[in-house]
Image 1: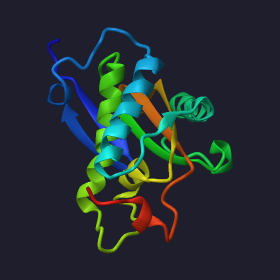
Image 2: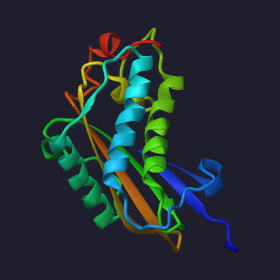
Image 3: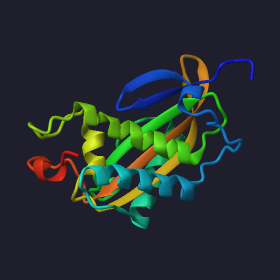
Image 4: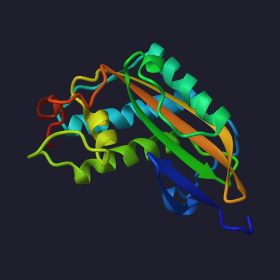
Length: 194
């Protein structure tokens, strides 16, 4: 390609532009669909690796959580919006969101899963174990490693989003967690230091 491809990463309103090549030497797989089996198994594995670091038990995939997460990912992709579902729409599960806007026609399913969970986990650098509690700067991380969350479901969907007059392919990621994490008063026993 002659023009440089960029993608925009957005989660909870924070956006940045990063050249595609920085994330992976081969982020595009030539397909426009997301392989949900690969995506979900990779997301589960990445979650469990981080959870192990924080002395939390491994989670298992839940078909009902996969379904609710996929329904919301489809909604985000269809409507070109980036917002949380209501608690009732996800049966009181916890929820993490992520979106990638790219000029590429696709993104590798495993790369998308790894990139998403890593971005959420990297909020660990701002977490204060001496003063445990919720912060919007660390809420994704604390949900990823929340000890009492035992089931995971994830969905991903491709849509289109126009930003600043440029049309992007948008890949929306939603993960649901049960029981939900980030419960006030329960951080000390659920977010353990490595």
